[in-house]
Image (cartoon, rainbow, N blue to C red; front, side, top):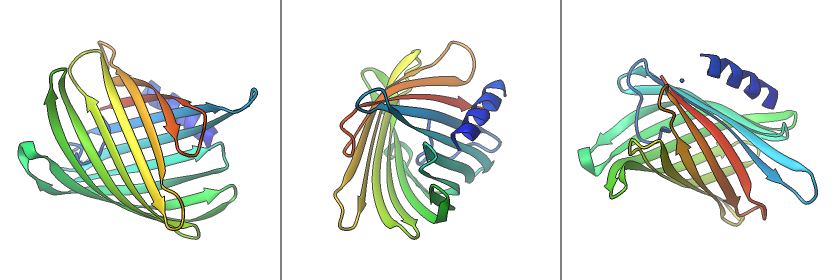
Length: 220
């Protein structure tokens, strides 16, 4: 699947902040593609690639694709639809998202269902404006596990060319330890165009090594 993602990347660059509780305007889109690499002991490397895309189908309906692959060993792909739940103005907003797809381990695949309740809010601090987003996820990977997740994202959109981004993800499977993943990053916005470049690091509870993440965002 990583070969497919590389091909998609080439097409996408020749042709455009993340989602959370916000919906896309009708006809607008957002695409993100990323690669995270870890170095094991010695000269061996592990990597994972991800593709995320969403499109405003109607004023109150956003649809999209979410896929992730770990060196062709395991991964998932699902389509989703997001609708608004409540908008409290400056106090924030809620949306709900329903996803359907499949997950695999090598050549075996099973169905996957996902429901996400998201809260998002714009913020204003001394460094400028930004946003926070909290996702509560109920993910059913049939034949494998029922996963409960709680994710947090915060970033600045100050108008400067470089802004910080922080992502914290947690997940829990019954009878297993909590899993967590932290990704501090920098967002770089060129003067022209709709691209945002992301460079960051990843540390998680299952790995002693720190990964390096590179991502591209495009809005259209």
